[in-house]
Length: 352
Ligand code: COI
Image 1 (cartoon, rainbow, N blue to C red):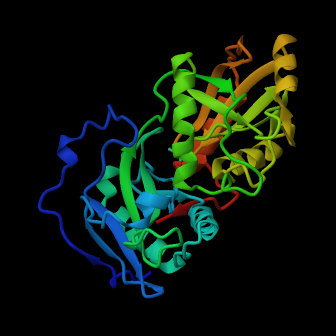
Image 2: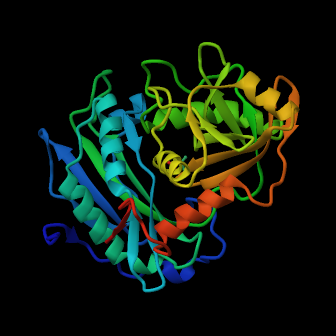
């Protein structure tokens, strides 16, 4: 890899000594450098790496008016030998370009993505801490920068990567509410994309759920609210007896990289897995009969997060506390691969 064409503007002084890496609120602290690449005159310009800091945009930039913005979530991990790894990064590039296509934005070139990311992470290697659960969260994103407010796609864009040291995404127990009124996405919409607006649209209903004591909503299909889809920050798995069930991908559900890794791990570890629509009625029925053993969410930021209980139609259900949960089994398997503690028969782990 020759990334010498990506110029680096050096920082004056690193902020790293001001950061308490044992007490990190997700996404509040950012590393010293960022990656930036502009799209102008129909092509991506030569990218640069520069000190992390504010960017200047015209108030009429289209992103502010029409939300033409997409993003990704990735993590860098360090093993005991100080080697740095990514997890299935090609999937993130594919997905951000799929998201961009849906929002009428240009695809980002593979060489700029990998050269830029690798150079940035090598520069910021001290921000990646060793140890299970420590990582450097990577946030690539694209925004429409053209100063113009007619409702049409921008001609100019900015692709950036910023980095944030991370530990757990959810600090405490996660209890969820099954959606009955609001929807996250609809058929033919942008639910499968990591479009910024998908997240903004969840904030208000989620704040109502918070007031009732739930941390997250599990979104249901917009037509009937009878089928469980995803949690917005996570895909969702249900365990009934010893069987694992998760909703199939469609144009309303994010094609989660952790999700598909768990499906593969389940298949290869003799755990029965069904990828099919999961109904609210089925889950409530299983909970009443004591057959619902687990619900857990999967995502890059959240990794694998057990759900302790759920609510629906003014009824609350608690989940049992298991000694040997699938959630902890998969979390260990996955993290062993990510942190270079086990073999990776899939080629998911990429050393950079
Ligand atoms: C991720 O898991 O990386 C995500 O993008 C979810 C985000 C809301 C933190």
